[in-house]
Length: 327
Picture 1: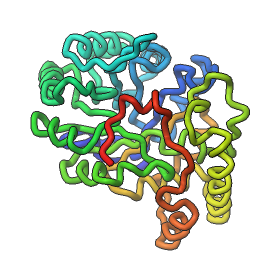
Picture 2: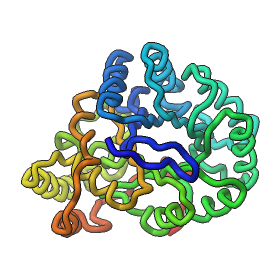
Picture 3: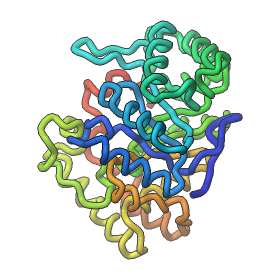
């Protein structure tokens, strides 16, 4: 596995990380044993960067990783997040009191005294980002985190926070079907030396090993509320994806590996974190960092999946409410 630097003065990590959201059961039932097998497979493939959060399964994802760390001698770089307060009155809290208490709880579940990266999961709109950056800077100085990051933020928020203390990473959605980050965020990260960590780089499974069928998703599953998987949009998206899948097969790649190779080629500061709880699915894309795309590959991918090709929004209105918009 090739390595990339995790932000200014950050550690070298695998060019592809592992997103551990699914360990919490958001995409269907899972077991600790299944998640542990996925973690073992990730390590065997050279993946040294794990991404989780306090709300993934309400702590379940972090607990599984903690169990894995206790029973193995592996020492990956771990990123976790806090800021989303779950419940019927779901809200965002970037206060020092909340971030500190949630970080302590995360460290306890992980069995660690520090993590390499700590994100605010969303920016609390009413709280100046400078105040939040001061809180995170203090956590760095205290040795609880190696660096800090932010998720689903705009370039102007990155600029303001970075002026207080260098931002190690920005984590926003980015893939062949979600391209907003190209409108300034990827470029600003590169200019500042900040890593850009694309989540859902496989389009929430739409570019995965097998063609997704939204009709088979369990009732209430996260993707059932995403407009791109809705009956009025999915047939159009499926038709485009089938062309991409055929091209990947002609080139001898899995669709997932080709999609990840495309993300990696967008800049050396990009470290995508595809998520899975399946060791088999992980093996399908773990070698993507070794794929070198040709100019013809880029031309054909742009033809098959041009900018703006996806039908429907990436979030419904409720899901998008806490995302910073800048275009």
